[in-house]
Structures are given as structure tokens and as C-alpha cells.
Image (cartoon, rainbow, N blue to C red; front, side):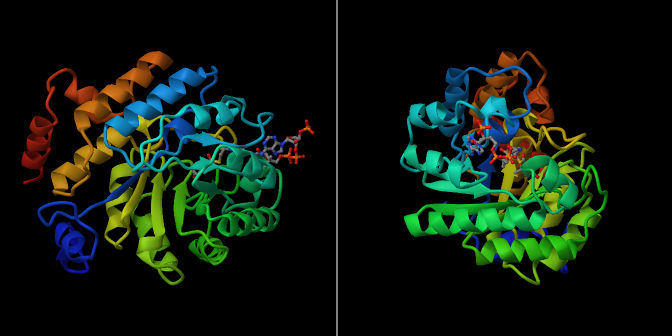
Length: 335
Ligand SMILES: CC(C)(COP(=O)([O-])OP(=O)([O-])OC[C@H]1O[C@@H](n2cnc3c(N)ncnc32)[C@H](O)[C@@H]1OP(=O)([O-])[O-])[C@@H](O)C(=O)NCCC(=O)NCCSC(=O)C[C@@](C)(O)CC(=O)[O-]
């Protein structure tokens, strides 16, 4: 893979990304399984299962786990136990447990749970904004600005999402310029990072490149994250296309769970197991134990009584019980 004439790994190694060990570059994985992964599940997942999943993800080595959503329970019943989830997690000191917040009401509730980071989520399309937030894009931004300003004042980190960055289920293609403008607004209101959401997974490496060129007119790559749904099987190639531009934070969901109840046709996110396997193959340090991750994926898939959407999880079967063996195999396949 060439990037501006250089192999991807060379770009990763020379990009200034922090490394943990032996000069290996680091990618920050932002796990969304307990929130994006579960919010679309039709049957209510008991609070203790959600909490156990979060503990398993932390024990696999994930450091950013979006754990709940303080949206209206009338809109997303699955997330109605957000307070109990957040209060029940045994928090590890080096793990970040952000939560989604749609308005000041949700923010005030989140604060009672001592959240250290919230995520706000305007849309890139008018129609989706109406369906998902019951307001226009501009009204949504105004509402989120109030939340972000209050959070910054309170010393709570704010992450922004933009939904439908590569296409809207109701409007079709969305202009990269529109997404760049919203990204710029989110950064200006205090977001430390903006996650670009391909909510319905229609993007390709080509559309990701076109979007990234526009985004980098208004943002630095270190303030951008990539959030791909894998509806058309493009998640990993889209991710590689984004990494070529220097982005170092990637969202993914355990077992490939995910979807938005208000985005017709949205399916699961890029699976965390598949992402970690790819990164091992690229020699990128993740500090995540893939065997434990696979176990976490099986735990939640078994609970939901559905097959995992992660190809790596399926392929590994019971062949490995030591993550170093998996790392070796992933590294071999990359040569
Ligand atoms: C924004 C609203 C609230 C507007 O919804 P609304 O109906 O316009 O709001 P409202 O202010 O008129 O309130 C309606 C009722 O909800 C209550 N309410 C209002 N707010 C809250 C709150 N925070 N917590 C608890 N309750 C709340 C409020 O008190 C009231 O209760 P009532 O008086 O009727 O008894 C609603 O549209 C909403 O919650 N939307 C969220 C939908 C959602 O969660 N979608 C999925 C997440 S987005 C996503 O997945 C995409 C992403 C981020 O992953 C990126 C990607 O994949 O690309």
C-alpha cells in the first residue's frame, strides 16, 4: 500500500504517533460495542450483561469504551439503563468510559454518573437529523454547542460525531464540504476529536479519500477519528484509506455489532476483532489481547443468540488460546 509514494507502515512509523514499545506505532481504538453495538438490539439486554461486556472489553486491553447513551428512553429504550450501567462499571484508572449525550438534559444526567467524557452527534444530512434528533442540522449544532460549552466549563472532555458522512439513507450522497463545515464547527465548540461516521456503511476507499482531502482543509488528522459501518464489507479498506491521511483513532465494535435505529439499512460496525487482527498484521501496536477480545465477542454473540459478524472471530474458532500465536499468524500473513 502506497501513501504519497511511501508504504503505509513507513507513514505510520514516521508520523509521530506515540509508540508503546520497540518503535512500533500506536493506533487508538475507540470501542463502541456497548453503545452503538447494542442500541439497535430489539430485545432489552439486561444491565448486568452490558456491564460484564464492558469489563471483558477492558480486560482485553481496550482503553476507550463508549459505554452508554443518555438519550431519551422514549427514542432508544435499549439505552434506558445508562445511569445504572455507568454507576455499576468497575472503572479501571487507565480506561476511558465515554457516553453519548443528545442535549442538556442528557448531559445533566451523565454528570451525576461522573462521566469524564461525553460524545455529541450532529448529522451530516437534514433528513437524518430530523429522524434521529427531531431537529434540523443547525438546531442540532446549536443544541450541541450548549452541551459542549457546559462540559468544557465542567472539565469534561467532548468528542463529536458527524453521522452520514458518506451517504444518508434518506438523501443519498452528502457533499464532503458539508461534512467538513460541521467538523470545523464541532472543533470550534470544544471537541477534542471528531469521529466521521459512515452510518450506513456505503462508503468506499474512493469516497473516504475524497472526504479526507476536504476534512484536512479544516482539521488536523490527530483530531479526526474514523467510524465505519461494514454494511457493504468495505470497513477495513475504508479504514486503510483513512489511515493513509494520518488519522490514528479508529472506532470499532465488538463482534461487529451495531446500527442506528433511525438509519434505515444501517448494519454493524467494523468488528474490533477484525481491526486488531489487521493492526497486528501491519505491525501496529494495539496492546489488545486478541484471544480475550474473541472471548468477549463470543460472550455477547452467545447472549444475543446470533452469530458473530467478525470474520476473525469466526475464523479463529478454538484454534488459539495464546494471543502471541495469533499475532505471529497475523504478522506472517502480512509479509
Ligand atoms: C434528542 C431527542 C431527545 C429529542 O427528542 P424530542 O422528542 O424532540 O425531545 P423533547 O425535548 O420534546 O422530549 C421528549 C421527551 O423525552 C424526554 N427527554 C428528552 N431528552 C432526554 C434525555 N436526554 N434523557 C431522558 N429523557 C429525555 C423529555 O423529558 C420528554 O419526556 P416527556 O415530557 O414526554 O415525558 C431524541 O431525538 C433522542 O433522544 N434522539 C437520540 C436518538 C439516538 O440515540 N440515535 C442513535 C445514536 S446516533 C448514532 O448511532 C450514530 C453514531 C453516533 O453512532 C455515528 C454513526 O454511526 O455514524
